[in-house]
Amino acid sequence: FIQFQLKRIVEHLIFRVFSLLLILADISILITALALTNKTEKQDKAFEITALCFVCYFLLEVFFRIAAKGIKQFFNEWFNVVDLVVVIVSFIVTVIYTSVDLGFGY
Image (cartoon, one colour):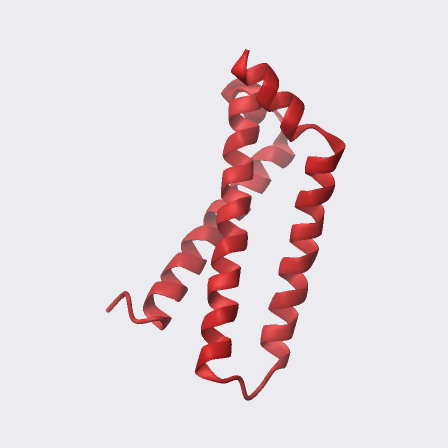
């Protein structure tokens, strides 16, 4: 029952449009962050934390889709596998970069 309800949510048009809008917002913010040459430290941290929030949402979204479709069906579709790899790599890179840059790392 929970899997069926979750599938209805993640396959709903509003959920998909919301995710697409977040992708566009993430790209726009990334372009803005790269275009600004003389950012303050506060602005830089804000961009990094925003990127971390986006990538956390995308990671959750992928795990919701895995739970909704089931592992076998999810991995039978190549675009889901590509999406999962991209999101996991993005998450790892963002977490490492943010941790080191904000002073949580070495």
